[in-house]
Length: 622
Image (cartoon, rainbow, N blue to C red; front, side, top):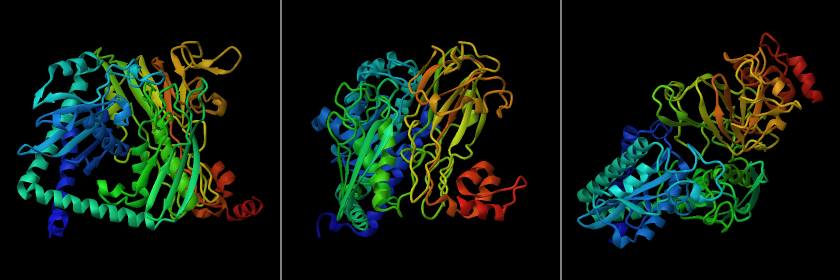
């Protein structure tokens, strides 16, 4: 026997677990040494190990969609640098979005790995940096070209033969508002790479490169067979779905996302070519291949550790000049169309296999970012936080409440204690959002609400692109509540210094808050519990409230940003839901008594008892 057939199954399994363990150890090194909460608390990173041919052998997910991005980014950057120019000890940066498949602050750092002067693989670590010379703090929401989005490295050696290039480090240092944290996170990434390199070298030295390579080929072969078998078990057909991103109010509302999934035997094709043309604002996404890999993996081999072979059946098609293959210098900083596209792909799949796909999730990351000068130290800060959304119901169960969007997998939100220690805010409320889950025989999961009350002047922005259109239910289920952000004045202030009422009675926001997506037409501010003396939060009082999707601005003490994430869609006819389950939802606060009556035809008394006669009558006439 020769090649892959020559290695025994036990050795293959040892190698597989060793590689997975190495990637996990890289993750632990990164988390323990990072400077930035978005890395060590939120886990906004993606870690990968590759063989010498740039084929994925193991990963350690944080942000799941980064892993497919790493695959494409490292290949483009190695091609740019030239394999012949790679040397032991090199560390290379790539954040050129059209190659790296992410925006400029999601910086891919990687190293070649050598054993006895032979290239045996690569270690890669992508993580979100807080600042790298973009025109605005935190996030750029209105750039018109990539040159406003930060310093770009196409594939640049920051370490050469193990020695730092001080010139490159100075470029980073002098182009960052937060140089200590930025360079600290770079060093943490490099530490993670060294951990991966050490472990891969140990593996090759213990078993020999021929044995390791043969074992990896067996892993790829097994992955390809497993994935093709999984695709072959899915129904053949071609299905198309359409969804929408908000864009911005200035002419780009309802950006069309079109996904066509075709399954033919053991081949799986995702076609995004009918989606909208690229935009002049930064809602283009360069990660079409990455989102395709994520969707494919979740419906074929979700329990398998990732490797190159598992994506063998997949083809992703995009169109140059579209939102999923923008051309330079198109802006890409808020590539949220790719996040929203995941649910659109699932919606297409649900047309062919509704028993295997849940209804839609809340569909977004619902991020709030705070920035400014720390009132105690005077030093600049940036803190980000994502919220969970409701996930969709399926034929067997209700949708989970307040889970991170599927593109984020292992990502976490920021604990209240950390957020209040890092930024001048107090969290008045962090709770599930009642009635946000889509009605259905299997209810959609609930979104979440977090109210930020500012204790000192502070900048804030929201990163959300699905606030003006609904998700979707299945088999008669209804969509969940939409994502929205409410902006509220300080108590007893309705003047021009804060969100308030304009002379004609319409809700408005001041010049210091730039609202890119205005949602005032969708909500009644007079019914919001932030307004008036009956407000539920401890910071209540006379307030006026405005509603937004994407916004950026400065806020004063006492003002509130209330982040409200969307719910999952329901599955099945809501009137078929077990009335006792609806009563339990009311007791748990998931569904209001009014929601139970109107959406489910279930009557629950004030003392929490099920009125069976009234329920039967209501459902009969409903």
